[in-house]
Image (tube, rainbow, N blue to C red; front, top):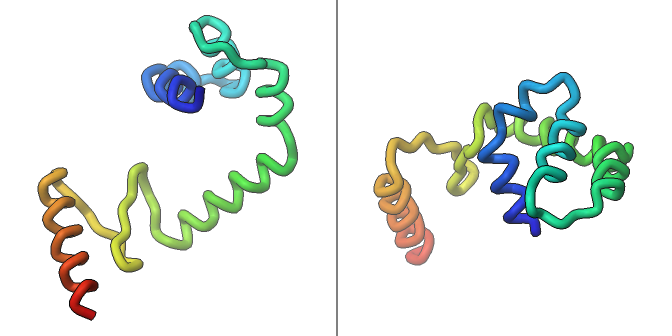
Amino acid sequence: MFREVYGLLYEQNQSWTQSSNPNEAICSLIKGSDIQINIDQLREDSSAVNTANVIRAHIQSGKELGVNRTPSFYIDGEKIELRSVEEFRQLIDVTVRANASN
């Protein structure tokens, strides 16, 4: 179910990210889809104080690491800027080889 919800939110991101009430916009999107989910439970979970605290902690952690967009990639603690999937593959291969020899 996670993938279905994630896919819907990704595909429809303009409709809920621009909303004055994103949580309700998300619930409406899900209700209008074929995804079977307990909307009342979703509302309860998404408005829970603990959920907000976890999200705030993740945002703060990202800021401290220098994350400024999604996705952001790090290898051996160093943020990397990529221009292509091939460049990413090459960098991973080089890093794996270097770490294997240590």
